[in-house]
Length: 248
Image (tube, rainbow, N blue to C red; front, side, top):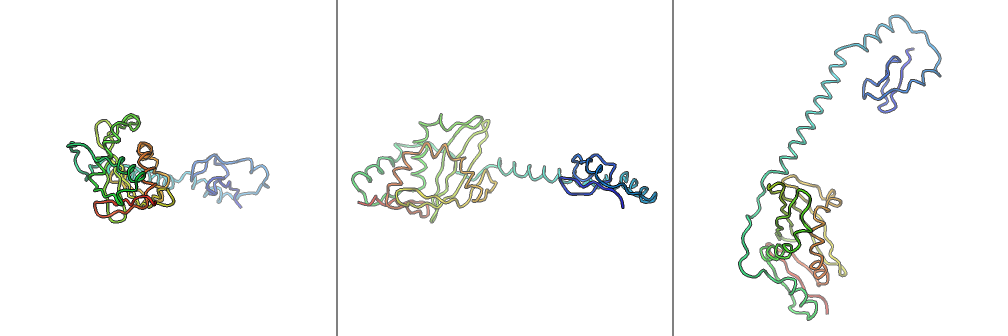
């Protein structure tokens, strides 16, 4: 019987003469050989074993596999980068004409005076207010190599989508996430329905931990979030949101 060394990492059997595993390259534990009984090996078995060790086809196959794996990983990485940097279908920036909607004052009046009974806003109105409110907090939103540019809101039936545009050396990068939102006992309960970094989709399960990419925006809008949490209800419709006044 031929003495072999079993790799501790991949459990592959190796010839006794080997120092490193022929499958994964891990250094073999040769101390195990000292505890084994010596067994006489037939000359023909030794000849075959040595031939396998120096078989060029065996090494070529392994090198080809690793080379193909590296090429495949590089292709996936390149595709992901392209999806991130491709231009997005977002509205072009427009200059604000007049005074932006004073949504924060509307929310404060609804909380203090319980009127009006409902507040109605369009996607465009909320987007205009967001960029006006975030403009004064630009320093807190800029990151190393990433400058905050603007935020956009889009309302659909039952969901709202937030898009944040940042700039990397002047090139626009977009982060987008869709949420289903409801108010529960004075707290905003937001469930992620999907997200994108550029055009690269991100699964909602991953976004449970990846929502940190919007952490600076949520922090900058802390006042507005607290006011909304005090409202009686929130409903999203196509291009509009309806906020019900707080219970009396």
